[in-house]
Length: 384
Ligand code: USQ
Image (cartoon, rainbow, N blue to C red; front, side):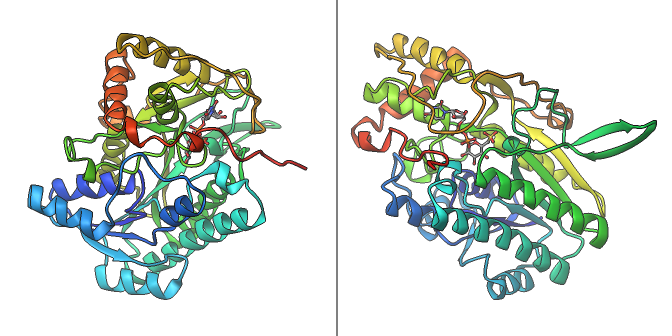
């Protein structure tokens, strides 16, 4: 397939680019380096250095012989989108090209606007790039489990059958996101659903939970090919943050009561899921939705796992619940269905004690690079 990867410099975009190239696909990866710029502006740089995309592609080519083509440009600019789509004419588009941080989107007006304009603007332009140049291509869009929020009923995979006054119909599962970032993903889903129904687009929306991990099969021992591993309060996801805190000797920053439950997955499973979605395209006019995670944990359960694995490595890991900077439920019902990707063939990596120890060992290799001031939360949800 000719695979266009949008947001190719990101935590997931880069390893996805390597994975598709290593599996024999023709890959063009695109990014505008927005996350790099925000990370620099807000002192949120990742643990390991990540060369620029051209440099990473050259290293990958030297090590494996596989090509990754790169274009740097802004997908919120329609002229750029037109030139990418008219020249490359993809069979499959993997769309990660969004500002991915919930806390960044909640800092203030400028950050919220940047998130809104980029995420909605890019998605809208990509839709029109497809309509103009490859209307039969398939888009795999990264959504988020956070679109659903934490409802007091089971979360279904994308849709809900509703019986109302004796009649039945199927609707998108109700969404109630907890940050502006998550809300842009809700709006994306509605936009895509409309263009599927009325313009016949083919889209798979992957509702993904928080991802953890560093090493993927295409980049085992060369840190230059690892994804950007953030541990700051904006771009660092929970498990990655706790791993770094454990190694740095900083008590684990449980927000509030720590009963917040989410569905987690290993970065290697993201790659599997995206590949499975790409190989099983949605039909014409169809919006397929999968819930993309492997195991549900509360924040406290994850803290316990990190403490236990830390002990094995001689780390004395403390836990320090702090006032929650977010507005979210800290104790709640959570039960999300996630059988679709398993049925397609996903072979999950589980967060075993052994796996947690391996993750800690990888972080220990970067111990001297940890900058402690990046750890504590710097953004509070709606201070007013
Ligand atoms: N949390 C803590 N302590 C911390 C950091 C987070 O208790 O130091 C809590 C948060 O309050 C939240 C939970 O852990 O309840 C998960 O937080 P997170 O930062 O790992 O996840 P989130 O901000 O929701 O965002 C991340 C990614 C985002 C993706 C999302 C999937 O940054 O791109 O869409 O995970 S989900 O959470 O399912 O919406």
